[in-house]
Image (cartoon, rainbow, N blue to C red):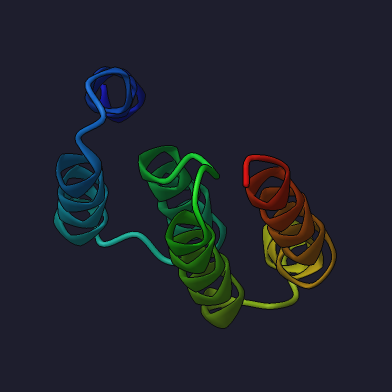
Length: 101
């Protein structure tokens, strides 16, 4: 099952393998719309928000989810996370970095 494979890669911090597995699954199953969005979100497991670069990757994933269909519930939620939650996470990371100086 894809979720199990992704969880194993995430535990081993194998980001590239997560992205490859998700992309291959989407291609093999010719996913579209909401199904494709659900699977695309699994890529976020590859980038736990530890660095600004991780957040950049998460932003790319969310933008791609929205691009599939901005009117689905997942498309709307991805846009909301991208526009509202990511800036807050960026601020927290910056604050943590400044406290460690």
